Image (cartoon, rainbow, N blue to C red; front, side, top):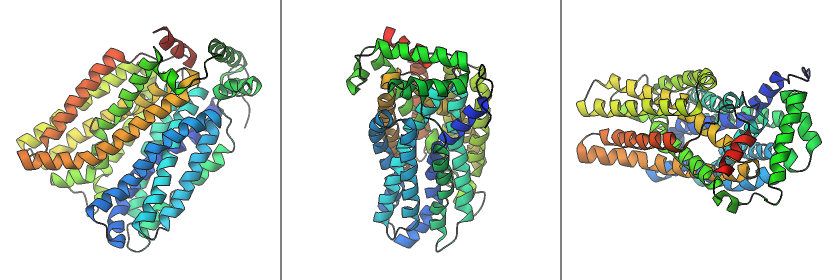
Length: 456
């Protein structure tokens, strides 16, 4: 690869690094949906009860919860790149273990290991991308991880439908994950370590080489000096977990946790997870397969994720975040009205598409972008581990409660409209919190954002 102009940096090199790092996001999306297509066949082959069906789905989420706890240590001690390599190893072991599982219990163990890989990847990839990206491109490049996630979801739908046959079909679904995992492992052997991690480990020469290739010689030297200045100002501060509770950083941690929890409990994730079920309940079906019936929603989130790139470049972080949440509230209210007034079943698609589209343009990418930016360098790995722990814990609880709440509202009030009114209320609280507490970070270096919290 040509090194590019030393004064301008090499954008192609930067984009390739980000593309490789974002395969972890692809695996998250692929894994999220492939289990939906495999579940009917698992139920048949393993004789699953309803409780064990839930266990088959949630075992990977439980692994994801534990991933950040390990990742907190690995990203700091081993580095961002090696943590992603470790995640890829967990993915590969899980892929073959799940494909050749002989019963539900060993299947769940292999899925749990894959969940650990997801947790490791989803903490290390956003940090890595944010720490390598030039400030003016950081929002767009971090969103590549979200795009990879959505591409993974759509390809899982295709793989699930293609391998929807009895016998070894569901095993091929899980085995198909070996292709992107192999690409991730090969790509990670070629990319550099995060320059900020290198500088923190007293390896400024290596850090400068990476920064120069990405930003150009002049800007690379300036950025390294900013990093070294921040490190010098906190030479006696080792960046422990206790530091996350210090004034200023404590507020950044609160913002990160609330944003990540909000990204899971706003209701749209449940629409994506349970889209076939929701469509069936309101009387809509686009074909004999539940996988096919979810295609319109998944295609829309792919389109809106692509639209998010120019939106992120054009609008402020806070403005785009709050605008997206407003449309999510509108979608939930419209869905509640649709159920209360018993409009034609086809109308249910409209609020689902509004909510899902607004989520993937606003909250979905911006929650990751903002939390990857707001923490000082010395505590970024630990802070991301904490907020990701809350993210996956919220995801697990919400996924378990959504069908229970839907059933309770339906039995008590003869409609599930109350669930969507509840989600609208949660989104309203999220809108208020974003307006009140989320800072604007667009165009600022990570060091300037970190010093902002210190001054608070």
